[in-house]
Amino acid sequence: DGHVVHEGDTVAIDGGTGEVFLGSVPVEPSPVSRYLDEGLDAALAQAPDDDTRELVRSVDRLLRHADAVRRLHVHANADTAADAARARRLGAQGVGLCRTEHQFLGERRVLVERVVLADSDDERASALEALLPLQRADFVGLLTEMDGLPTTIRLLDPPLHEFLPDLTDLSVRVALAHERGEDAADDERLLAAVRRMHEANPMLGLRGVRLGLVVPGLFALQIRAICEAVVERRAAGGDPRAEIMVPLVGSVQELRLVKDEARAIMADVAAAAGVDLDLPVGVMIELPRAALTADRIAEEAAFFSFGTNDLTQTTWGFSRDDVEGAFFAQYTENGVLTVSPFETIDARGVGRLVEMAVTLGRQTHPGLPLGVCGEHGGDPESIRFFHDAGLDYVSCSPFRVPVARLEAGRAAVAEAGVDVR
Image 1: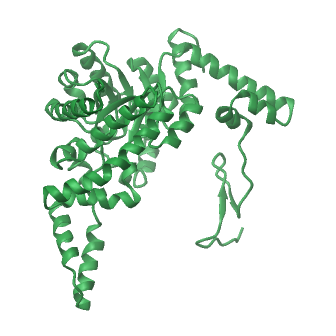
Image 2: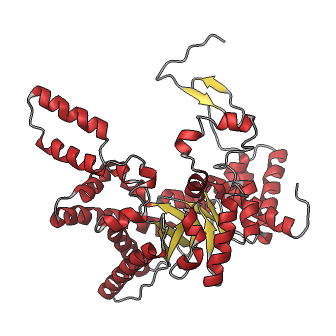
Image 3: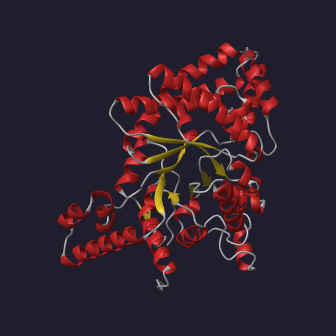
């Protein structure tokens, strides 16, 4: 209507309708969200009328029935203690994915940079020593909130470049220093290292398990921090149930190498603390080769968790960051896609790899625990697929846990032959 919105102006967006409002608007929890976050009694006490109270009671009945009939467990993707606490309030039965790279942002990023670019063992050891107590404290907080529930912690997964200075910015900084006649020796050394490690396609380069095998001490730091956090929580009377997940595995030998390192660290920490320590080490299945060789990987893996975001990227050959805004609208319009495969699992392609990995994995390892931790874990249609495929749990954003609980219940009822549409 002729209004011009400038950078820095405040606007409010209704996520349900897409309406945009100029300025801020008052926001408060809905009765249902208050029920999910605070419980039935609190929601009823604050409900403004009888209709609202009946709505809250209906949601409560529906979710309790879904919980009673569903086979799939519902875990949450949680990177911090606050995420874990919220997930537990919303009904999560564990953490299916802790993305540890999110704990290396901000002031800690420079320490990771020092680890990756270290010229000597002493320099790398110094940076790792500084990171250890920070990482251990992260895990203590997470395990405290998830006490008594499985907590799957994924070792570093992102590509190498996310831990390094931007090549262009660094090049400009060095060029400007030369122009001004300033000393740029440190930046020149850094620039040479970044150029040496630069990758044309970093998402398919030095990341995940590859990064842990190539950069000495990086995975060892995280594994030690997990083990020491478990020991600390046990000493405090807690019941920590940490699980270690190795990302981007394509070969069983990669898993063997990390697992051997993990076992040695567990033995060292256990001996120092005078306790027994035997944490499960599993894998994230996010490459087609991992799914195709799941029988061999299951020889060494304590569990599988399907990372369907990357499994979709590597199966379709799509770079999600590039393609969704570039041509998905046209692909939907001309019928190539009916829905984004990153929103709902591609049952005929990616889904067949999941089913194959389930079959092969359990042929080798009967009773192998299986879950999914990609964003599909919170999508209703995908949850039905995972139920039918025989997975044990789905893991999703804390905010999608109630929906996942409901859909897991609907999947169980549908399997029993009841129409739930």
